[in-house]
Image 1: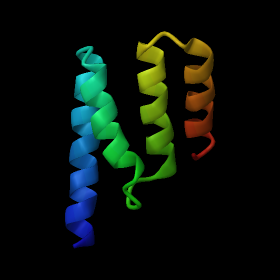
Image 2 (image 1 turned 180 degrees about the vertical axis):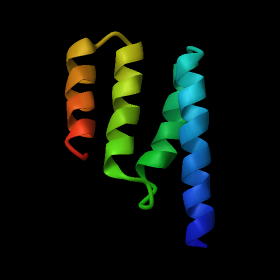
Image 3 (image 1 turned 45 degrees about the vertical axis):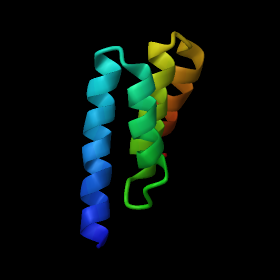
Image 4 (image 1 turned 90 degrees about the horizontal axis):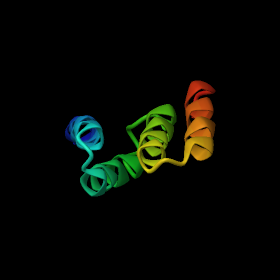
Length: 74
């Protein structure tokens, strides 16, 4: 069951990143919200997702902090 959960998290991660790059922020946030509660997904990945969303929204200060957090390991 854990493998299915992990695959789901990875799929949601990919879908969220595609959605964010295509400007579909609402869809990206929905996918990233599922990734955020998936215990199998690494903390740096979750921090990077949050940084993607706020950067698309134009909040560069918060995005920079999120990227720094992701680089530090979550």
